[in-house]
Length: 90
Image (cartoon, rainbow, N blue to C red):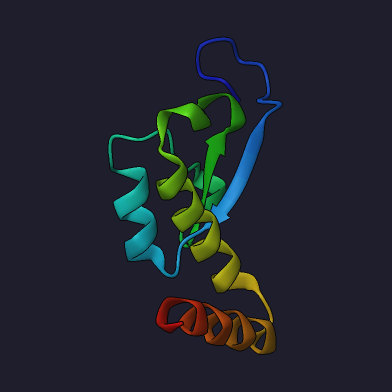
């Protein structure tokens, strides 16, 4: 809920940090990311789509990739990381 209006947000995206420490680093930073009590004890955090312009494309890419890596099936993670390593070394 929007603390100002009391209305439910209609543009939320849930992301996941690798762990709760990573989550704290993201939500306690200066960016638009935040958490709610529902995510206490969980590595998930939120961002409003309307505020994504406050982060760089590189930062957003890193956070979305980290989120996907924390949730994707291990086989896909291994393939992604292997492909990425090949691109970085190629």
